[in-house]
Image (cartoon, rainbow, N blue to C red; front, side, top):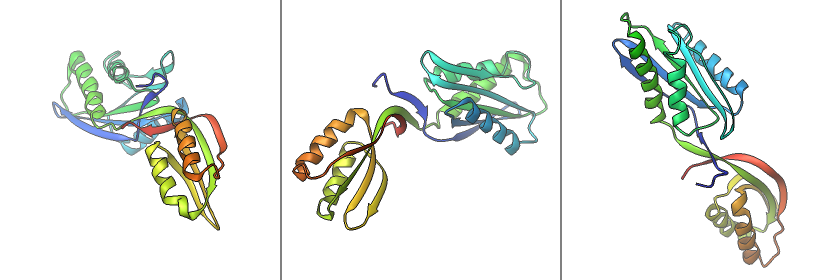
Length: 214
């Protein structure tokens, strides 16, 4: 994988495990900022308002530029948040938040049991994750005649473009987002197809966007 590509979850997922009658529900979501992570934690607390504990852990950023956070939310110190965060860190994901919600089943698990349960809950929800990458992108706009539209659609698909908007008037105006590395190839292919008659306009550069990991 390109080192500039940063692994993130594509969408929110949830999974539940049962440990000695206690339910552990792990809810995981992408989060692009600490504020988004905290908002997701609040959402889960409201959804499962009658639960015994809500243990959060999140990683914002990638590589050396990251913010991490976890708490035990009433569980014995070091038995919940840190194990959850450790598993999350081992996944290679960034911009991710997980909340492990516990419904106490009446039997105490002990320190070792709690560490294992919270770690296992995160491991299991990670199996449900669809991965995506956060990559440098360029957004382009161009106008083309109807006769070229189907062929241009195929070119965009071949170069991994994400169509942002298409406006059908006398001619067709297309706004499309590409990974930076694909822009030159698409530009050359479009120039060859249209004999240089279709002009590309750069709408946005030096931005980052989410692309599913193929």
